[in-house]
Length: 510
Ligand code: ATP
Image 1 (cartoon, helix red, strand yellow):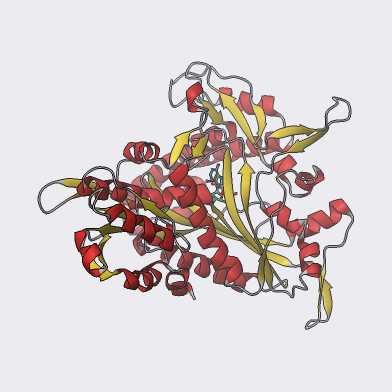
Image 2: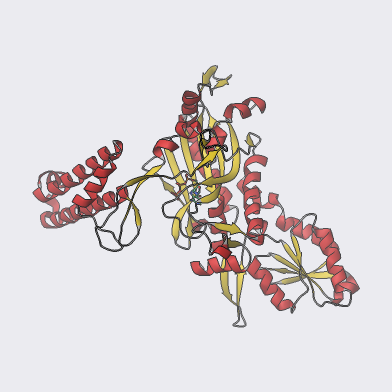
């Protein structure tokens, strides 16, 4: 896989992703999608949308607002539970999650226990009774007590929101900054990941709002509207794509973790008690969607969560092998009836469904699939970018994007800028543009034009030469193999349709 720095610079050089407001030196962890990037992003979004909404008769889409009634975020738990306790080191200026510092400290003691156990197991051989040993060995007992006391105190302080005590704990444990080695800490502060803003002009009457930290809540609050107006029968799903905002403590790794990003989410409403089957089914369906793009089965894996969020009874990530290792690309969560029940409670409105088959009313359970569009972009882009050494010893940079996602599907290249070739090329562009994103280029030697299209990820180049005028044939060059095939112009439609239609890609997941 290509070096990460090269990926970022290629994204800029070829008009995929620019740092935001670059003329003012940019804004940390904020990016703009450029002319090619926006097309790639849109194609990924469409590929997701079609697979979800068009291919499932029981899934419909919505587009809810980014602003929502502030009580939404009370009900969802984001006001109270979407916090991280932060602490800064004054010397390194690095910011940490205070609870993670303490947990890391305990993990180190845990390692010491493991070492004692390993030593004793070796010493006692077959007679070793680990349970007995851990209960009675004074050193191990001491370590374990230290861990228990520390975590208990951390838990209690966090529960009571006694952040001063969290800081005391860090100081008492003599925890040092991993970067500077110093113990010069600031106070601990609660850091809510939601961005606040105000609605309304006057200071007195302005209403405090949040920019949504996830798109899901726009679906939950519309559950009954969609169910009734769409006459939807459970099981059914609501899909949505859109921006979400999180004031991430440490935003990094290019577009992997940003403060403003886009999600593609689907909430699937099901009868209580069936969540396990649906959860398994959606895990499988979503993995197949990823695999349909042909980026290698070996690059994906599931990671089942042990520590569950307050709303979930099961959760897994689909992880992808990014240039910096396996990381979460998509989350699949069994959210129980937490959200709808909570919105019922806070709004005082019933959010229930009458199930004719069961002859009962209930609050539906939900299985959700949630994938970051920007992360998906990074997965595709970083996987696709290659430096290849060719047979003649020269090298080329090629962006082997799945053809269905490529920003430009076809580049039309007249061999020379005369003899009527540009006219034929432009006419061909006029014909093909109804169905495909087409570009036209008549500058430079054709070899250089091929290289440029390779770097842009264009799967097919059509070259018009003098023979075209004589017999109505063109050459079509495949980006991946670099092989050229001569073909009648009138055969192009069928060829391109075969290679570039959604059905041929998406049917792999049926
Ligand atoms: P992480 O553990 O990486 O912070 P998360 O578990 O908080 O992610 P979810 O709340 O499950 O993420 O959001 C669903 C998806 O949204 C993630 O799988 C990811 O693809 C995307 N996502 C979440 N946070 C960001 C972000 N800051 N920037 C870009 N994409 C994000």
